[in-house]
Length: 212
Image (cartoon, rainbow, N blue to C red; front, side, top):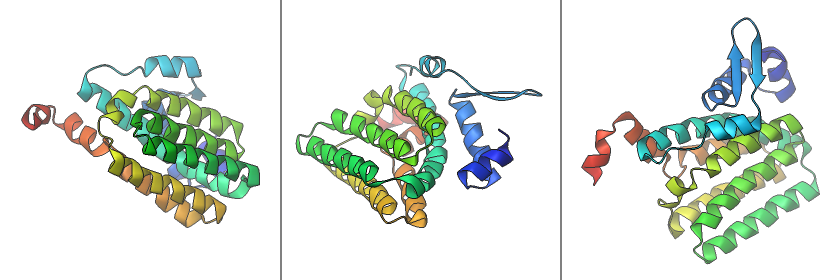
């Protein structure tokens, strides 16, 4: 479909669609060919291409690109979840939140991070659009390959702050409040653990040596 058709289907502006497509291209999910159109690459290709390097700076740069793509998509996902999520879908989100709380209680931050990623797949399923769900799942699984980078910046305080944001996303969906959902999604990615760290060091690799 064209940008105009996608914007109409998702209920967002063409600018949002254009930004999302650009971010997905950077993340390796889409292939844009001049004169031919835009194509979804296979999930296997996208994920294998996105295997993160062990170098922290390069990995951080790749992670930023994936998170930018996820933010653009999550806004559309939130809108559709507000429109389509039924009681069973919201119950599934509540259950995921409970599992996240338990992981914090156990101080198992690796499990907590993986549960936050599961959370976004559950939200995408609640949106009721299988194509959007598949794309979100691909990006989430790509993010999962960077857990080693995310985990080291987590402690109980960081995890509890993250839990509040995910809880607020659920409450916005439950209340069918689109403005609150969009604001919370943006807050989620603004406050994403390690995101500011990786942005600083991807722009200035020498900063890593100065920090040590």
